[in-house]
Length: 243
Image (cartoon, rainbow, N blue to C red):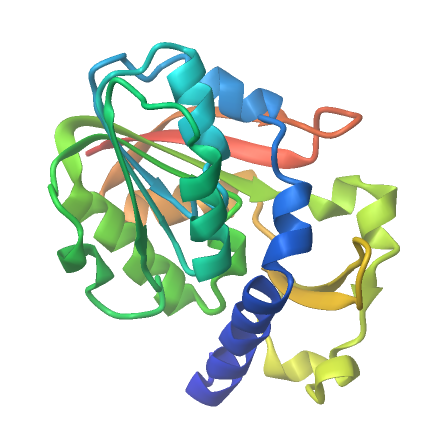
């Protein structure tokens, strides 16, 4: 992907999560069924890094399950991280912290400590990264953060399985781009939740493309399933192990 196009797509999502963090946060308090399924694998005293943690929904779910390990949530949105800190309104028995991180910044993983996590989760994150090179770079960073015995769990939207989301596709001319400027599977979706509409960039993954990304990054896929939404097909989940 052309670096200038990639920068414009990143800016679209950056603008959305900075400008609409409040309304977005109000829609992100329910733990999705697929996330619950993954959370069952997380041991109580483990170390966890939650990439794209948003307003800390997973952190609060882990606390409710009696988690007493080390949790680090990272996100691009300062507004969502502020909500995450505020909503953690009971002293947890574990160590919980949040950090502002931009996945588009090369070497972002070097700013995290430790770098040997038992679990790395990235729910609804990878589809916001434009360009195959940036997505591969992100998975390579995951590989540097996870312990040899660790697990990585990711989810990506399957917007095409939702009539509501299919109706929200916008033409690329909305942002002064042409279809030929972007990669196959890239779409724009609008956002409406009580304020002026927002726009988000999404890359559409298949089981194969997500699995190939894992393998190129030094992982093997050990579980694949669909979950969430009214038809349990709104998100594709995979669990990876270091190869």
